[in-house]
Structures are given as C-alpha cells and as structure tokens.
Length: 88
Image (cartoon, rainbow, N blue to C red; front, side, top):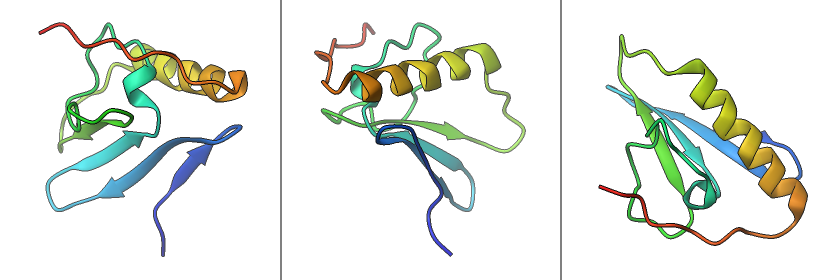
C-alpha cells in the first residue's frame, strides 16, 4: 500500500496514519492562510504544514475546505506565494 496523495496541478496534501494520529500534510502549507489555525504540526518547516487529527477530534469542515481550495488555487497559479509567519 502507499501513502494517499491528493493532487490538482501538483500535490495538495498527503495522508499518513499512525498509532495515535492521522496526519494530513499540505505540500505548500506554509504559503496558505490559516485563520482557523487548523495547522498544528510541522509548523517550523519553510514549505510544508500539517494537521494532526487525534481520535474523537472534530475538524472545522469549512476551514478545511478553504485550505484545500487555497492549495488548489496556489498550484494552479504556477508560482509560490510568499510565506507569512504565523502570529502566536
């Protein structure tokens, strides 16, 4: 079996399952706006960002869809956007 990969004009997101978490890693996550703060893993990377989902956790569906739409738009634009540091 392999790692699931979702793509549109390039990789949007990969999914990995671990013992206590499902990790969704956005290939260009550092370039995406995340006002709902879904990204909670791999925050120090210069390109990727990830969402770790633990058993029983709920993910904000509309915020997740917005991240996917942004990732598709970014891939379709053909050029990376400048990364903005997240506010703590």
